[in-house]
Image (cartoon, rainbow, N blue to C red):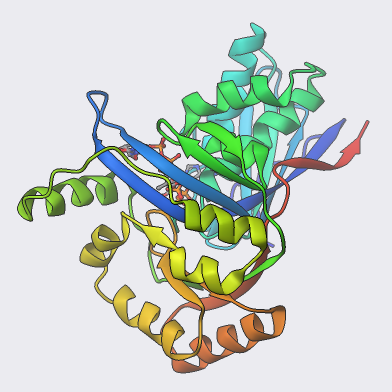
Length: 318
Ligand SMILES: C[C@](O)(CO)[C@H](O)COP(=O)(O)OP(=O)(O)OC[C@H]1O[C@@H](n2ccc(N)nc2=O)[C@H](O)[C@@H]1O
Ligand SMILES: Nc1ncnc2c1ncn2[C@@H]1O[C@H](COP(=O)(O)OP(=O)(O)OP(=O)(O)O)[C@@H](O)[C@H]1O
């Protein structure tokens, strides 16, 4: 592992929180709002790819530092723009105290990949610092603070499967009747979430389409409830997919490669460019991942299952 900052590891107490990635099994996007965001019906599903966030005593009193290791660590900002640092600062401001923290992030969630890796790190920092500083805030209170950092942050705290409305920050947990097995094909490079939403608006305008309010899908919710992978595969839908494909045309070939190899469903994950494939079992997922890698259509193909719980403390040292 590479320590990209070379900062010393802080002495004293430390709390480590594990946070899952997400895939959106339905992402229905309404027209742009006056504040620049879009109303959504966003069915989040947490999957077993995790970032670990450790919060320790600050290197200097009141200071925030961050070190990042793991997958594409060199693409993650190390200044105040890091979403984990922003979240820790927001929590300290909420508490009205000048705490400071030394944050360590071990990344396994692709950066700028449409799987909410940055949001996961923000959620991890909120849970870890809440514990480190002994604040005792509830998960609901942390979700409120997290919603101001990013639309996906409250879900990273909640986990499981949930329907997000508003910007995606208002969550209602959904029932899931079984384990779903996924393959995630990682792309070279990332996509900017804001640019993908803007491209969605542009493509709709060019096609003369006026988007109505985003709508739920009863058949999808029933497939989740029944644990029926074949039915879920048929109902997967992402309104941002045409925009992601317009910005990265090669993704169409990745989706086709997964379908040809028997995936039950193939979709761009969130704002992309990661492509998600649903399969019928862990063995099918492993075979599909190997097939996609052998075909050379992606940077790497990872297997994971869902759903899994949201941000949780996995280690704490006094
Ligand atoms: C694509 C998804 O990942 C699906 O879960 C999310 O909608 C994006 O969530 P996120 O990365 O947390 O995004 P935010 O940090 O809240 O917003 C980044 C940018 O995405 C656009 N954005 C985001 C959410 C939303 N409901 N409407 C939007 O138009 C806005 O341009 C915004 O400035
Ligand atoms: N801790 C962090 N981890 C990853 N990216 C971060 C972090 N903090 C800030 N960023 C910035 O945020 C950008 C988006 O990162 P992120 O990995 O959250 O994208 P994403 O997975 O596409 O998110 P989403 O699915 O929520 O749209 C990155 O390009 C990076 O510059």
